[in-house]
Image 1: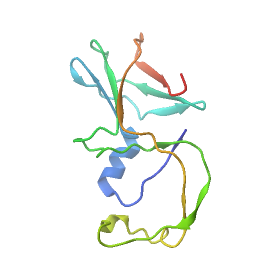
Image 2: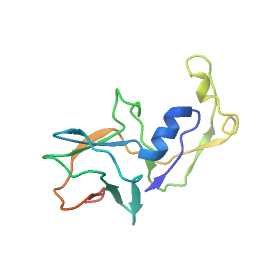
Image 3: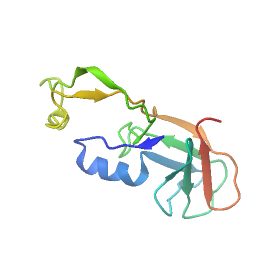
Image 4: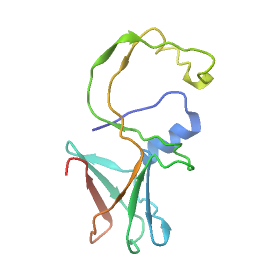
Length: 134
């Protein structure tokens, strides 16, 4: 797992950089994070909460209708490059997708984590560990 940038998303990208596109929600609502999530080993993502959890908690990745717009900043470490090159086609592509350093270059084939919701394991303390390979 690697945190990666998504070009051309401005303020959205800044929010994604701090949360990596994740939101924790429990019975009391959104759970604030004490620090940005971090990666531990090859497949574990660690969240440190700023308050105790209240009841059942879910992890949302790339939650729609939020500041994440269905995106996360987490992908696998596949370094394969495409045989084709990146092309900007206007329309239907948005201006923010016209990334000069990408146009005409092979693009990455890494696999991005898809949006979804998962129930978090019950933990004592302020940390939640999510193992994507478990």
